[in-house]
Amino acid sequence: MTTLAMQKRIISKLKETKDKSLLESVFKMLSLSEETEEVMHLSSLQKASIRKGLKDVAEGKVLSHSKVKKEIAKWLSK
Image 1 (cartoon, helix red, strand yellow):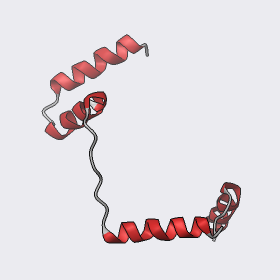
Image 2 (image 1 turned 120 degrees about the vertical axis):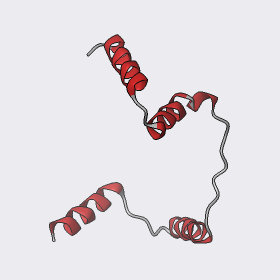
Image 3 (image 1 turned 90 degrees about the horizontal axis):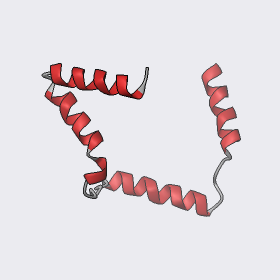
Image 4 (image 1 turned 45 degrees about the vertical axis):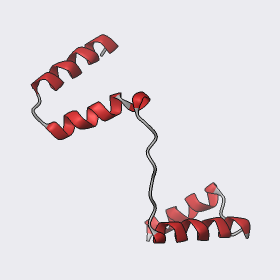
C-alpha cells in the first residue's frame, strides 16, 4: 500500500469513527511535536526501586544482555 493510499484510508476511518478515545489517542500521537514537556511523578516505591538499581550498578551487580537472554530462556523452558 502506498503512503497516499494509507493516508486516504486512515482519514476515511477517522471521519467514520465516533470513538472519542480513539480520536483522542490519534490526536495525541499527531501532536507530539507540539506537546509541552510533562513532569512525571514517581511513587516512593518507584524511587526506592530506582535507587536500588543505581546502587546495584555502582556495585557491579549487573548481567550482560547475553547472560540475561540465557537466563530468560532457562526460565521459559521450565
